[in-house]
Length: 58
Image (cartoon, rainbow, N blue to C red; front, side, top):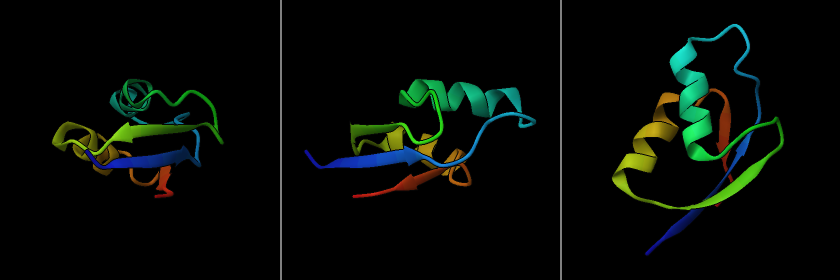
């Protein structure tokens, strides 16, 4: 299974409440935090919804 690493680059303050929940479900809590996740369809859809606040590293 392919893994991807994502980093949170922006804050969810003054954003829709759902976007904050999407970040939490990805395991991101603070700006600069990183997670390595399995690239499943559900994870990719969450990343797409908050693409303006995260960066895919690998």
